[in-house]
Length: 290
View 1 (cartoon, rainbow, N blue to C red):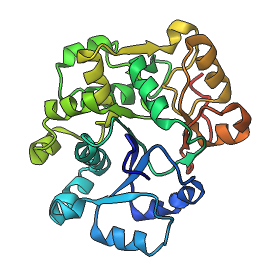
View 2: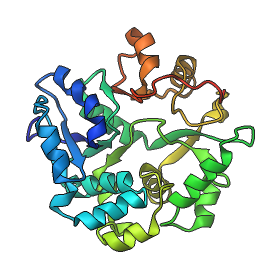
View 3: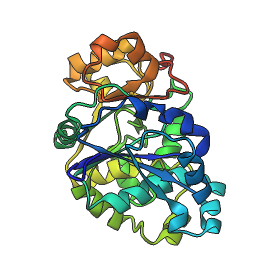
View 4: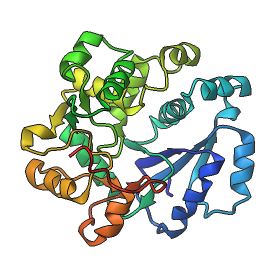
């Protein structure tokens, strides 16, 4: 890591997932991004330190800022992951131009020019997904996630831009936050009023989706429906197979920056623009939504 980095990855993590931090051992020294881990308790940090993992990351511990009782409330309400993500975003929003927030079950593939890739992603001002139809048995889940994530906005406006809450782009690409927008967004949702903020949200508020809505409503971002390009996938790009990956590039002229783990392993030579993979713990593509 370097103090001159203007991009970073923020990763909420808990002890059972420390096994995935072995990816740090293979990272080169001269990265153009930083890595920040977000832990819940001081005891989690003690356990992490005992592992002697290559120290190419920094750590933030919620217990250094919040009471143990409050953290347990977050866990009991099942909003701890979303809160940790917003917490580190709020802490680092003035330090970086771009912040990618990812889960711990990742593997870095190509760490070259991450800053420029983040910048290009944000400059493109588009989020790719699909308008899920009733043929998908998970349509109600998608609508519930979108409704819950619209808690900070006029529900009718979100229904309109998402076609009755059916547009879904979760995990289509790395959740990258442009901090110029992020600063406004966190102020808009009044995140720093932790108690009131946590009363508003629930498990189904997926952290990046409220930010997507903000960008579309106020920053001229566009939602790109893959069905409009003849791509037959009744879901987001999450867990897409290799054939869909190729279609996304050729038909939309869009380069995803991540892909599910096993698809990359099976086609690594064709994945030179991929920064990282996700779902190392469940890395198979899902073709049932084709």
